[in-house]
Every structure is written in C-alpha cells, then in structure tokens.
Image 1: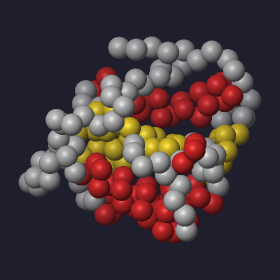
Image 2 (image 1 turned 120 degrees about the vertical axis):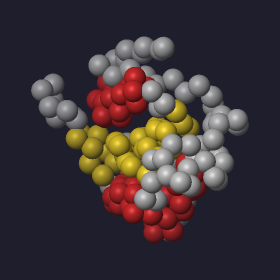
Image 3 (image 1 turned 90 degrees about the vertical axis):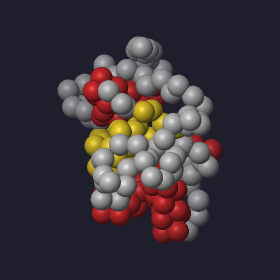
Image 4 (image 1 turned 45 degrees about the vertical axis):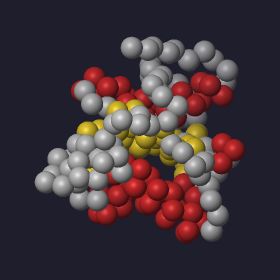
Length: 169
C-alpha cells in the first residue's frame, strides 16, 4: 500500500540549491483543483487503475516527455497525471554546469512546462506554485517513486471514502 509523502514545507526551502544534482518529486495542481487532466478508471480488485488522459492531459504528457530534450542533464524517473494535479519525479545529473544557477533549475523546468501547456491549451490551468520533496537518498527516492505509481489507486480509495494508510518518517 502506498505511503503518503509528507511535504516538509508549504513551499520550497529558501536555503536549498535546486540546481544541485539530485532527485526531486514535484507536485503541481490545477487552478481550483479542476479535474481536467485525466480520469482514473477502476479496473477491479485484480488490476491497477488506468489513468485515461484528457486532451489537456495528453498535452501535459507531451511536454513532460520533452523535458530531457530541452534539458540534457535531466532524467524523468516517473510521473502520473492525475485529474487535478501532476506528480513528477525527476533527477538532475551532475555536469560541469551543475550548481551554477543557484535555486533556479527545478523552478525553470516547471515554469517552462506550465507556460508551454498554457500556450497550447489557450488558458492557464495551473496554480502559481508547486510543491517538492527532495529525494536525496535511495529510501526517499523509492518512496517517491512508489507513491507516484500507487497514486491512481489511492485516488480511487479516497473517492470511495476508505481510510488511506499514512506512514511518516
């Protein structure tokens, strides 16, 4: 069963270098949590739920997949496009330029993703901010990865008002 990921801060850490080679789980929400990106299809108890993307969700996915082309030092490890939010686990690779643009790389990636999807869709979908978890250990990375993969099932359980297991470090 998936664990909840606990965000340490409401927003990003002010004294942390977000251009540092590391892995980051990023979460960004639609305005007013509008459910316009996907639908979660219950496939029964044996199969995992299916994430069926809307037209908007397909546009978001297209630009997520373009991130490594635009940023050669970025790897997309996992993502899920939920009805009203996106979870994205990405890793910044160490290069000779790593750490030069202090606190900007992760924000630039999210800003570009939001901007490109807004331009193609023709209206803004996104809340201004995003949330992050710094996955700087194998344990944190694996928790984030598992959380993303299990998020559609968690969504269905929450919708059915079942209690969801929560484990905090």
